[in-house]
Amino acid sequence: MIAVYRRQTRESHRFQVVSGKGYRATPVRLGRWKIPATAGVTLYVLLAIVVPILTLVWTSLTPFLQPVSLSSIGDLSFTNYGAIFTNPALSQAVLNTLVISVVTATATAVLALWLALAATRGGRFGRWLFDLSFLVFAIPSVVLGVSVLFLYLFVPIPVYGTIWIIIIALTTRYIPRGSRMIQTALLQLDNGLEEVGRVSGASSATVVRRVVLPLVAPTVSRTWLWVFANALGELPIALLLSSSDNRTIVVLLWDMIGESANYPEASALAVLLLALTAVSVWWVNRRGAQPTH
Image 1 (cartoon, helix red, strand yellow):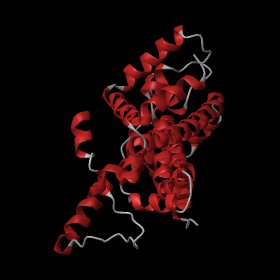
Image 2 (image 1 turned 135 degrees about the horizontal axis):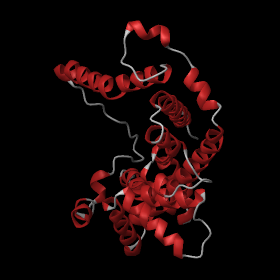
Image 3 (image 1 turned 135 degrees about the vertical axis):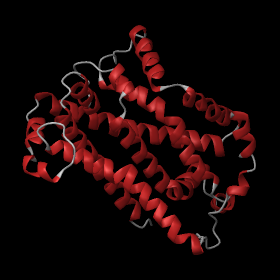
């Protein structure tokens, strides 16, 4: 599969659509398919996103697990949220989750950008590293977590039992996907944009900093957001590498469901996690909508 991917992307000029000649995206008009396409997308959003979220909110407001009904509206309350905020383990889990997600997203975005640049602008060694990172796709999260666990049990680096071992595992997990997201944006850039900079006397580092990075900055921001959102909800790796000092929100959520089967409180915690993700999405999209100079 790596060989097939390399063959399909070897003529990268076919994907170059962003040039210095007044590039503008051309929308494709659906015509008579507009209404069916809109109906299909709306139905998918309702069934896959809206209804599950509303069910989760309903469960978080109930005293015990019960179906949605008009007769149960009088039983709804914010008691479960109060119990969540008085949970002594929550504050540390929230702090661990935020630190892990932010550091993982930042490290992944930086390393993925470097790897994508090495694959598209570097030599054979950069392309070899890029292709090698494909192999992580085939490793399940559980296997990767166990591998990192065994590695740092024997390697004399004091990260076992801390948040850093989770950050290392998650960064390893998300770098392949992140590098391909950024590489896609790099393949769309016309080489003429960089050639103009070099003809003007700019060094390669200056061309990358002044020409390439501003053009791929929206993709890097969305890569950061994608990693951040996934790191918030990553369970297998966090569960395998968790200890009393580095528990995350999803591990706490797993304990609520698995040990006490307290679904209403678990739903309340899940709603808070969803709200945190929604705020991060809004923040990144707001920054991405601002014009660059």
